[in-house]
Image (cartoon, rainbow, N blue to C red):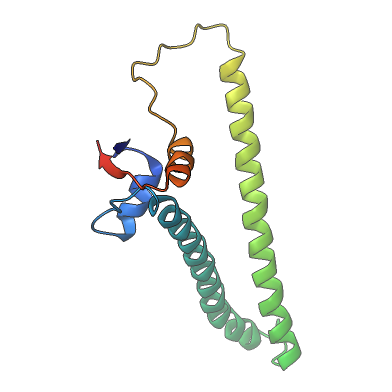
Amino acid sequence: MNHKINKDSWHYNLIMRYLTTPPKSLCVYPYTVIFFMLLSIVLVLVAITVILLVGYAVIAPTLVMLGFMDISWKTNAAAIITSLVSVYIGCIMFYLYCRDRYRIYKNKKFFSDEPPKPKPKPKQSNMIVAIIKAKKEKICPRIEYV
């Protein structure tokens, strides 16, 4: 019993970004995808924080030399916290904006006057259904990558 996963799928590409050989069992595959999704999110947040702190380490002494900022500890701690919080809020707002733009794009595409383009590829079996069946049968099928 084999389950086929397309090599062009986003989850396969995500796993292959971190691993050299993909999982062979369907029972391990969803946990691997979730783990690498969380790892990617954490890496992006750490990168943003490092960029902010390095930027602050360069900008703060310059502002102190020019006389725009006091060198006291309270000002520096408040500036660090404010910059971190503002960038994270900015990232959330950017995500919400992109999601809204995508929704508008999908609505325009759905309600356009042009007929929809035919889909040449047959739909593959649902991975979630295959995982649930495998859990019920207590047999993990092997994954075939196509």
